[in-house]
Image 1: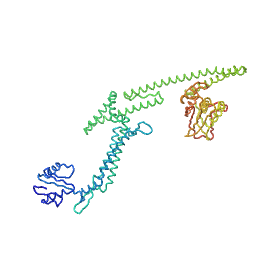
Image 2: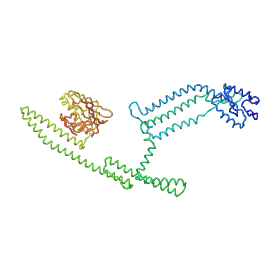
Image 3: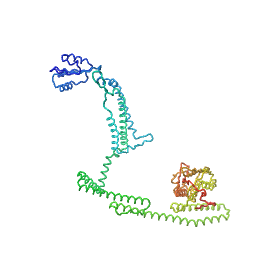
Image 4: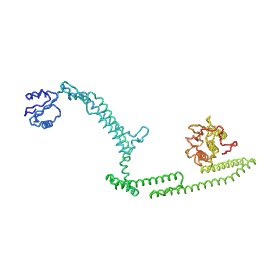
Length: 590
C-alpha cells in the first residue's frame, strides 16, 4: 500500500480497495502466518519465528522506493488453493513429520558408521590366517595415481548422473481460474529416492576403497615410499649424484628441447626448422648406436654366463663408455677361463691321485686277500688263529670295497664315465635286485614287502649304472635297517614317470638331515661301527641325476625313505626286448 498516493498493489482483487486497508489487514492477521511491515520498526508485526524486522523493512523500502508504505503478506495455513504453498505443505506432511525420527536414526547411523570405520581401520590389511599385513594389487599403485583413479571413478559418474537428473520438474493443474504448478517429486518420489540411494552407495564404496587403501599404505609404511613425489625426488637425487656420468646426455637433451621449442614458436622459420630436423637426425643416430652397443654387451654377458668364457664382445663402433664396459666384460671372461682351467687341472689332479693311490692299494691288498685264503687252507686248529684269519678276511674285503667305491665316486663326481643308454624294464630289474638281496635280508631277519605294477615300466638309462643305483640303496637298507622289521619296496607309474620307493626303519638314531646322508663319507651311524664306506647313497644320487632321473631322501624320525623317479618310455617296438643291464653270472655290462 502506497499511502502517499492511495495505490494498492495485490494479487487478490478483494484487497484492491484502499478504503478497506485496515479491514484487509485484519483479515491478513487472521491467516495462519503473516507479516506486516511499515517504515517504522516499532510498527512491525509478524507471527513468524526468528524474524528479523530490519531485513524486512529495508528490503521493502528499497523495493518500493517510497517512505510511507504498508507491506502485508499472509499465508492461509489451511491451504485452500493448490498453489506452491499447498504443494510444499503436502511434501512436509509426507516427509517432514518424520524429521525427528529421521534425525534420531541419522545420529544412530552416524555412531554405527564411526564404529564401523574404526573396526575397518583396525582390520585393514589383516586376515584370519596370520597376523601379517597383506596388500592387494591396488595398494601397489603409486599413491598419487591411486588418488587420481579414485577421484575419476568417483567424480565422473556423479557428474554424469547429476547432469542427467533435473533439479525439479512440474505438472500443470487447472483449478478454473489460474494455472498452478506442483513439484513432480511429490507424486513420484521413489525414482529420486532410488537414484539417491544408488549414488550414496557408490559414493560410500569409492570412499571405502580409497580410505582403506590409504590405511593399508600407512600400516605398511608405503604411503610415501610408493609415491610419485618420492620417486621424483629420488630421480632428481640420482640425476645430481650421477651428473658426472650423464652430463652429456642431459646437455644433448637440453639442446634438443630448446631447438624444438624455438622451432615450434617460430612456426615456419626455415632455419630453425632445418636445425630441428638436424637435431632429430643426430638424436636418432645416437640412440641407434647406444641400442646396438647395449645389445652387444647383453649378448656377450649371456654368452659368458652360459659357459662360453672365451667369447669376446666386438669393440668396434662402440662409444668410449660402452667400449670400456665391453673390455671389462671381456676381461671377466678371461679371468673365468683361467679360473676354470685351474679348477679343471686341480680336479684332474685329484682324480688321478685317487685313481693311482687306489691302484697302488689294490696290488698289496690283493696279495693280502690271497695269503689269507692260503692260510685258511692250512686248517689251523687253534681257535685264536682262526679268529684272526676271519678278522683279516673281513677287514681286507672291507678295504677292497672302500677302494672300489672311492674310485667309482671319483669318476662319477668328475664326469669321467660314459653312459650307454638303452630301454630297461624297471619292474624286472627291481625283481632281480630283490632276489639277489634276499639272503642278506634273511641274515638280519628283514622281510621285504614288494609291490610292483602289472604293466611294464620302460625307462631309458644305462643298464650298468642303473643296477649300481639299485644295488647301493638295497645295500643301505640291508646294512642299516633295524633287525626284525619290514622293508617296503614299491614301484608305481604316474604322470608319465616311474616312481620307485624303498622304505625302512633305521636301527641307529638318524640325527642328521636327509641332505647330509647323500654327502660323501656320511653314514647314519656316526660311530662307524658298520662296514659301510659312506659313499653308496652319494654315488646312487649322482648316477641317477646323470641319467636324467630324480633322487630324493626323506627322514621322519627313524623312518628312512629313498625315492627314485625316471620318465617312462611311452612306446617300445615289439621285437625290441627290454634289457635289465645284467648278465647271468651276476656281473654288470654296458
